[in-house]
Length: 257
Image (cartoon, rainbow, N blue to C red; front, top):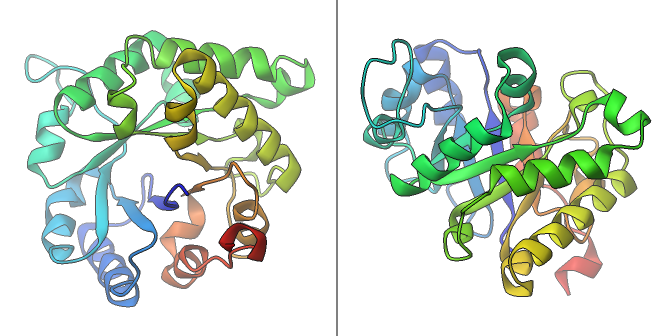
């Protein structure tokens, strides 16, 4: 079975002190958990300090974004090499907020994926449709293009370092959540795309997370789905109690057998 991953995207929240406080609680409360990959993604200014706090823990540190160049005259940007230097093991790319608010294209996101893998970092690769695209019955077309173009030239071997995160844009920060069935249908479709673009083995091994208003009261149903391998958590990851409950999701008996 694929090892579940629960990742917290803190977005533009938390000072360095606040980030350290939250990371300390999460570290303390999850020190015996070994069957779930736990990841947190603080703001850039907190990464190095939080990395120091996480030493000796089983929690992976992630950047929220990067620029696909090792160095250069790119004011305000952060490279994969600098993220790794700060203690990161992962980086989120293609988040809907980057696509929607900053106009990032699939080809630009692909550059980031390639740069991160070249730097030895794991990738949390986000995809997802808007409400308009879903209502226009273009969801599958959009997801197919995002996967095809975002993972262009990524080899089957490199896919071992890629985690896909499906996040329906209409469910992010809105309080709306895809139903368990809607999430499973989208995840199964994405896994089918991976099967077509790569191999059965790659598709079966790739973890696909659900992102979109994941909360303590809906995580159990989502995680009971066959193709849902974890969660990319936004707002609920900012509260230790909520995030810890999501990490401790209750597995479906049928999936534990």
